[in-house]
Length: 180
Image (cartoon, rainbow, N blue to C red; front, side, top):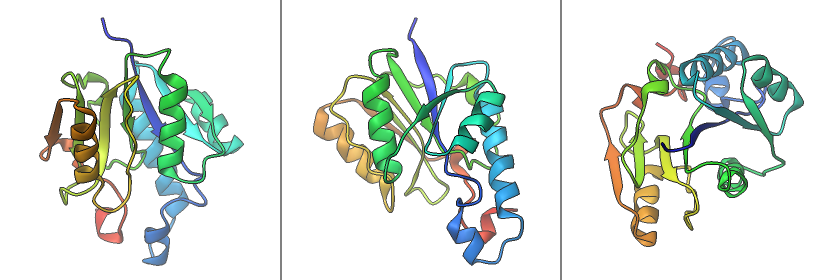
């Protein structure tokens, strides 16, 4: 049986979702907290590790039964890279999930194929879920066009790769129009 874990990087709720804040969405901190709560609950009962630089987020994660990987990373790519390197000895596969999925139901049932699995956002360009075996020389490339960049990275290291465009987890909440 494969030892795997979900890894959920989270920013402080009062600092998260910059595009929503600048777009005039109200109660953004409460929304970010609600989305993260739902993601963590949907991953359970499987092993969940929250990556964060915040003691408040660490307490939030522990209160919801998650392990915490505290990081002083400078950005999402750095946080994912550090977590991947540190957790590679404990797990055979890590499943990186964004904490802002609109409908995370069923995550605990996700069983990716061997190799790298990329679940894109609803635009088909971003990476909402990224599953990969540990111990690879994989470099994370979150940001604009991350799905294609992650696919190229899998090709670079010779790992089989599946890109999924029609998952229920393709909807994340980044822009005001994503809230509905």
